[in-house]
Image 1: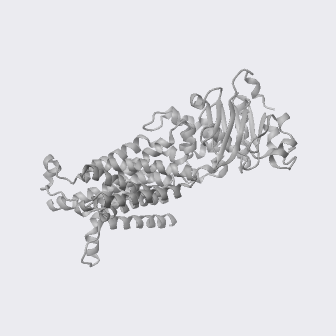
Image 2: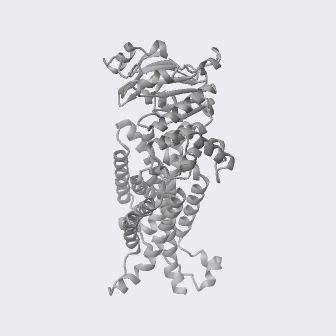
Image 3: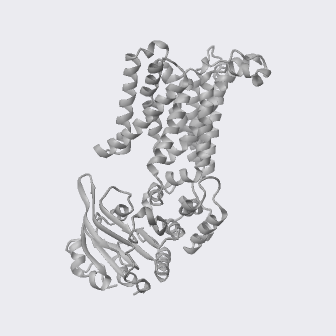
Length: 252
Length: 297
C-alpha cells in the first residue's frame, strides 16, 4: 500500500470533509445526507451508475446546487482554491473545440497570469512540463480533436497537474482508456501520493482498487462504506452498493 | 466621388461594422453551442427598444440601447430562472422566453403608438440600410471636416462604439472567454464567476444586435451572428483563426452585400436592385455552403 498517508500528521485537517451533503436533480435525490471525511492519500470513490459519485465531487466544488457543507483543508473552498485541482469527465467537453493540447493545459494557469495579453512564457512552460509528465510532449501543438481518447484523458490529467494543487478531485480518468494511458495515470497517482498529495478519484474498475488505493468511499446515493481499503472494501459493502453481486471484479 | 460618399459609404460602413461585430461575437455562441441564443437576444431586446423610445419620445440611439440592454439582462435572467424552475433544457427555456419578450415588444409597439413614428415591423425585421445617407459629403475633404462628419447617420456612431467595445472585450478577455466556452465547470472550479461572464457576453451580443438591427434588421443580425462563425468552424481548428476569421468574414459579407446589391441584378440583366440586407443574408448562407464544400474537398 502506498505510504503517502503517513507523511501527514493526524492533526492536519482532512483534505475534504463533507457534512450532510444532499443534491436533488428534479426532486429526486442524487445524493442523500453524505457526511464523510477524506483521509490523506489515494481514495477511490466507488459505486454503480447513478450512485452520485460525480455528483459528490461537483457538489463539493460548488458546481451543482447542494445542501450541506464541504470544507477543504478545514476551510471553505474560496479560501483554498489554489490547493484544489479538478479533473472533469472527458465526455463533459466538446473535443472538436479549436484548441491545442497545450492551450487546454495552459487553462490551469489562468489564475496565475495577468488577465489580458498573451500567457507569460513561465506559465506556458509549466503547461508544457505537465504535458511532458503524461507523455504528450510531442503532441502539444496538436488540436485536441486529433488526439486519441486516451491522449485526451491525459491532456485533462496534465491540466490538473498544472494546477500544482495538494488535493486532486478526478472524475473517472480511467474510464475506457488504453493500457498506456492507464499505466501513465496510475504512475502519476503514485507520484502524487509520494509527494504527500491527496487524490479522490471516481472509479469503476473494482479490480484496481486493492493494488492502487489506500482508502475507499462506496456510494449508492448515500454512504455505503468508507475507510481504509482493508476494512471498508468488503464483499458485503460491494453487494450492498451494487445490488447483490458479491465479489464482482474482486481478487485481482 | 461625392455621390459615393453621400449614398454608398454610409450603408457600406454600417454593413461592415454590423457584420464584423456580429461575426466576432458569433463565434462564442457557436463554440458554446448556443447559437439559438443570438436569435433569442436579438428578438428579446424589442420591448426594451420600444419602451426606450416611448418613454423619451426620441428615436435616438442611447435610450433605445439602454432599454435593449435592460431587456437583454431580464431575458437572460428569465431564461436561467425558467430553466431552474421548470427544469427545461436551454433550448426550450430560450424559445419560451424570447418569443414572450418579442410578443411583448410587438404589443408595446402598438400600444405606445411607437409604430406611427416609423419604428415599424418592417424596419425591425429588415432594417433600412439604403436609407443611410451622408448628404453633407462634398468630396474626400469632407472625411476630415468635423462639421460634415457630424452629418453622418447617427446609427454609424452607435455601430462604431459597439464594434470598438466588442473588440476590446474579446482582446482583453481572450483566454478567459476561451476557457469559459470550452469547459465552464473547470472555469468555475478555478473560481471564475462563469454566470457573470456569460451575462457580459450576452449583453455585448444584445448591444451588437441593437446597434445593427436599426440599419440591417434583426433577421440579418441573426444571420451574421451565426453564418460567419459556422463557416469558420468548418474551416479551421485554431481559436485565433476562428475568432478573427469570423469577424473578417462578417465584415466582408457586409461589404459584398452592399456593393453587389445594385450591380449584381444589373449584370444578370434584371432592371431592379436587390435589398442589400437580404443579399448579405443570402451570401452568409452561401458562405456556410462554400465552407462545407471546401472542407469536403
